[in-house]
Image (cartoon, rainbow, N blue to C red; front, side, top):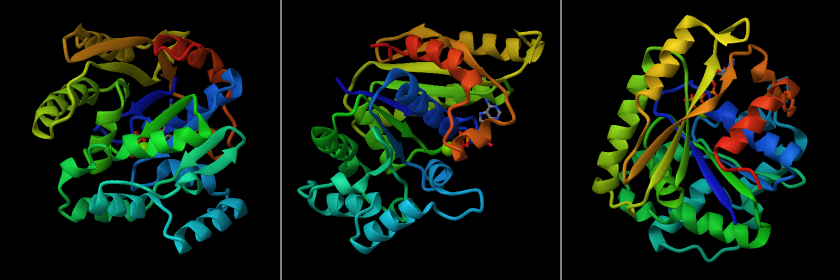
Amino acid sequence: MLKKYAIINFKGGVGKTTITWLLGSYLHRYRNRKILLVDLDPQMSLTLGLTLNEKGFFHQTYREWLNLRIEKKETIFYLMEHYYKRLQIQKDIRDYIFEIQPNFYLLPSNEKLYFIELMNYERKRFKMFIQIIIEKLNQDFKFDVVLFDCPPNFTNLTYSVFEFIDEILIPCNPDIYAKIGVDLLIFTLKKLISKFDLTKKQYIFYLFLNKARLFLKEFTQETNYFYHQLKLLENNQSDFSIKVLNTYLPERVDIKRSLQNFQFPEEFKDYFDSLSKEINLEP
Ligand SMILES: Nc1ncnc2c1ncn2[C@@H]1O[C@H](COP(=O)(O)OP(=O)(O)OP(=O)(O)O)[C@@H](O)[C@H]1O
Ligand SMILES: [Mg+2]
């Protein structure tokens, strides 16, 4: 069965995009899974990270593919517009996703997604959008895992993602904003769920410390303090269950390069073995 995870935090720069890519590439490389990454952020960090070369130009295969998509109006932006007007998608949308490697696919973002937010569209009409397109794609591709890289704010697409998924990975950094950010995220979501008529279900929130600072293989005092602040948020309510993962990721300066080189960093393998177990991604 398809497993679906959103990587969300309304706080910017905590590592959502980095973790989406690392988790996807780990599952692809070491667990032999068929992966779809979905870039929902108009900033396009994931898309650009995966498709630009060191000189800042698109890789040729991606550029040719993208030009064709634009010419044929086959991007997520046009799909949303079309859906908004008709509330259905009859087209074949297989070509909308780009094969990065065999069994590893990307539904890229598009800068025009900013306009969708500016157009005063009625949000509720997008409720089923993500579910419909992913299920349609999945009929052809039969993915094992889909990962949604979300923007640091609430958009029509994040709204639609909440309707589709149950499990949410929230990267947090060990700083003063971490706990406040998560409090805010959960408070906001509770409001949004009723305001926008999301189907009631039990969401599982996995809080996950990224950029942990270590000294002699132990958390520094500061990282330890903020980790325990997150632990205070753990609970098991009827609509939200919050679990703080034992797995964390250390701060490593060279992590940025791994995305552009399309190389999962070997030294992170153990962390992702442990992460995938904790978030039920084991076979
Ligand atoms: N474990 C880590 N160690 C060191 N740097 C990291 C780590 N994780 C992420 N980063 C760096 O932090 C920056 C922000 O990461 P990223 O773009 O993944 O965050 P984001 O939450 O997706 O940001 P945004 O909210 O803008 O979408 C990047 O420069 C990235 O390389
Ligand atoms: Mg991002």
